[in-house]
Image (cartoon, rainbow, N blue to C red):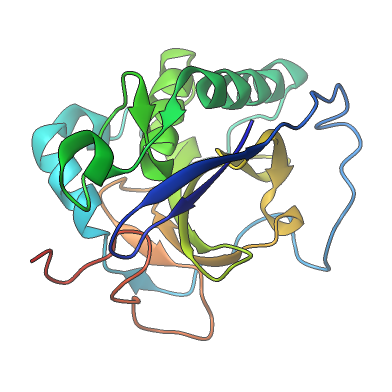
Length: 216
């Protein structure tokens, strides 16, 4: 299924359509725009407020489970795991806003049955870690989507490139094959630290993908 998620105030997730499974998800990737397959970091960024609160409650989800900062080997088996986890999580979780579920505008959680886009990303990260992926290879990432709205995805940092697990589409894509503008993501060295992916904006946006200097 394809979902959309809008942050900045109220996070809205809606079902938008169905994408067929593709056996060639990883073997026939066409470069959509002339960018390298690996993301470039441009400095530090302020972590999203919702992420900070999530780590306060779920400290074990925000600690590094590996001291190895090398990129994870992109074997066919591992790439198949990305595809399986992305599709199964998109199917298992019903899209819903934090306001609908909890009565608040912004709350990052590991979803049980319903969640919004950052919840999808957190659950995919947890599931992949249980399959043996290192936390340094699974990074929550904030983007502006094709509508210039805040959105969260999971980046899998591999030797073959940075792949995106997205609740808006079941296929796993290289980051430069998406229509997104990349804003910031977790550091692979320390999951509690965030780095900027935006060369045009040295400061962290105050109201994108749950980034709020003051949640009040």
